[in-house]
Length: 299
Ligand SMILES: Nc1nc2c(c(=O)[nH]1)N[C@H]1C(S)=C(S)[C@@H](COP(=O)(O)O)O[C@H]1N2
Ligand SMILES: [Mo]
Image (cartoon, rainbow, N blue to C red; front, side, top):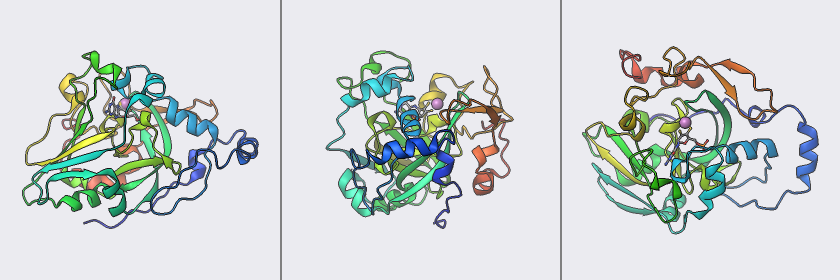
């Protein structure tokens, strides 16, 4: 398995410059409220309200509606306790792994990643979580497995958006096995040392920082190891616009808009567009995974 990854972004990258001191002073009086310890040692850090609000109130989670504010408004209906993740397919120890059992076994870390949505906006998010590779090790990947398929929980009673056939439910995603076990690929269970809010994919969601946001599937209940490329929700709904790989690539435009630049959400409403980086800035870490592949064909 690859070595552990070193963060190059800091909390300062996730913090708007304008008004920094004022907010810090205001928040000092609020510290403590709502802070919950994460497994593996929590630090009593307090997010700037701009950042927390932006990350938790401007979301895509179509099971709760297609509006950016639908998830924050409606995802509280999702029951996340108890929770288990079924790991099956080509593994030595298939079965339902309880969320608490997983949390006890995993090494928790903070990972501050650039997060880039396909609609040309980006954020820098301080996730808490563990490497997907470590979770796959719990189940033991069998020789011959080549892909990892993921599935989101499907609960029509709690998810008002699944009445609408905007996607084939449940939401499904997939990675090649080498992408899945890359140390940059994590399962996130927190943001800013707080438990991850439902609208961001509680209790655990994938984060693949060099790919467009839709690969980062939320509220995962099944992980299946397979030897064939699994279907993915967005590719199934529109294969011309969304490929299986979906690596952030400024040279390949979405058919309906440019992917060459992006707008940072939050950050004090500067709304300056900046050039999008190949592999979302993680080129030196992940380019080798795609050596010899035509990334225009495998978009
Ligand atoms: N189950 C599920 N996962 C999902 C989505 C969704 O609609 N349903 N939206 C995806 C898209 S398009 C993006 S950009 C990110 C958004 O993550 P965020 O709301 O935490 O920023 O989640 C991804 N994961
Ligand atoms: Mo997205």
